[in-house]
Amino acid sequence: MRSKKFRNLMLAASLWGVLGQAPVANAVVATQNMKWNPGHYLLNGKGNLATQMNDFQNIPALKGVIRNYLWSELEGNVKGSYNFQPIRDDLNLLKANGKKLGIMIEYKYNNDTDAPVSNLPKYIRDLPKVTVNGVAQIAPFYQLDPAANKYNIGDHANFGHPGTRQGFADLLQHLAAEFDDDPDFVLIQFIESALGVSISSDKVTNFLNGGMLMEDAARQAFARTPLFKNLNSPRNKLQIFIDNITSNAMGVGGPDVFVGAFGDPNDSLTRTDGGFPGIYNYYGYNYNATTNSNHLPISMMIHKENFIYDTFAKRASNTKNNRSPAAEVNTLIDFANTKLHPNYLIWQTFPNDVYYPAFKSKLAAEGQSNPNSILGLVKACPTVYTSCAGMTPPAPSPSPTPAPGGDTEGPIITINGLVNNEVLAPDRVNIWIDVTAQDPAGVSKLELFVNNNLKKTVLDAALLYKWEVSLLPQGVYSIKVRATDSAGNVRNKIISVTVNQ
Image: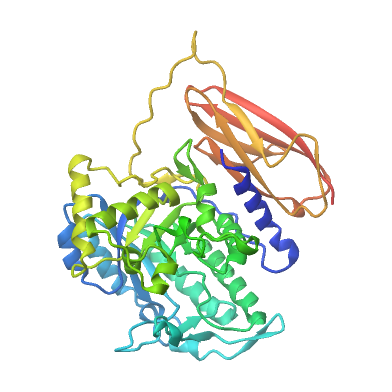
């Protein structure tokens, strides 16, 4: 059962639309047969893919590669001049080696200072200013941080500009037409939410709202491909981002795995000062230890600095850990699995890196003992998806113990978030109905009905549904949950609530 705190976070997020500070997500999407390939992946910006495939060809624990492509690489300077051949070439190479491809589209800076190329097509950079909610918007911002030794520089797409957002939405529609049904094209991970630029506060709202509208467009384009948004900051907006992601059946991406974050009071990933939790705090509420499953899927990235520094604070002070490469790989896997519960773990390490052979050896040794192992990552289909296809088979469940005289009782149902005969206050906009069921034989299906109209079905013991009560007329509504166990027994639970507009 998900914790009360997680449910409260989700309910708090839903109130953001009431405050008028962000768009209320309008996508309630079908997620039948989502492609599902949890496991370990290499993060390969522009590294030698053929060399890495030769190294990992016979190591099944490495599922594939997540590769970066500039927006300007996939669409030329003229709008609609798409070139997806780089993706096709990489996908074919990976298929030939029994591996899979995920992508990141770079629309936020480009760190290649030796041969600087904008990550944005020229037509985007040339878009005129427009006014959105009374605030002038430029199509890209330019990012430069001299204090960080020019770590992040370049053009940063502003999806608060409708022209930028529409151009990217068109790109996603064309990508989906070619790759959404390809079983080896396994995910898209969108760049971190941190602003990365110094802009006035009146521009921040449009900037972040535009990012969430881009996420809506991404899910409308891709019906079967898992989508992840890397979230880290601003912390006072994370709940709103998660609400939008949930509405779009997307996943939470993490741009960093810092081992010591939970023990470091100065680490923004876990701090709760000001009442705003860091993103790491959300992962525990997302994870169901009873079913070993996530509500939202989780994809974490281990960047090269994560091998070296335990926390943001240590990176800032240049204080390195002293673990051996093999110990560091083991430590990162253990920390990720026990604290963050990811489905996908993406490693930025290359053949000339001291951590590369340690990572390769770890995956190879695991594969020799268990070819289906993904070293403890969460395999189960997330409950936010209606169903998953192509996933690695989970470990077999223990055989249920039949009740004396045969199993004749349906599952025990618990409905959280609402109580029978509750009268909803007029300011209640979105209600998260959180359902769990238990049965000795195992729960095979949960169905949620509102006034006998089927709203959601999951093949799982937990269901979460966003009920948009602000769209409903005043009246009494029947909420019914039907649970079916593995023996075919059915039980219903019905409550009534009054919507008081």
